[in-house]
Image 1: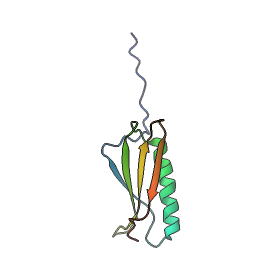
Image 2 (image 1 turned 120 degrees about the horizontal axis):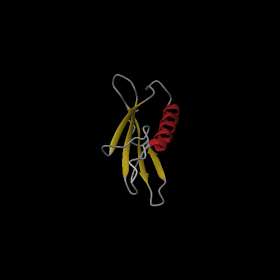
Image 3 (image 1 turned 120 degrees about the vertical axis):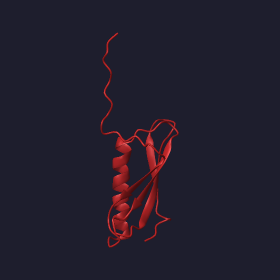
Length: 95
């Protein structure tokens, strides 16, 4: 038997818990700009996340200000066909 073991992806993000916070933008940016930043970051995340089928995680997006404001929340999950999908919710924003 060979001692070869397949190397793990080093760039993969394995969520150790069911949530994550990301800071981006500023409260001085327009809300549309902040939404675009959140969408772009969520797209980056789904390319490097390792989730099991049916597993979900919540990602909160905050501004980088001294008193951070909540921009929105993304719900990221892996569906039964193995695709990682996300939905963004800006209804909880504090801006």
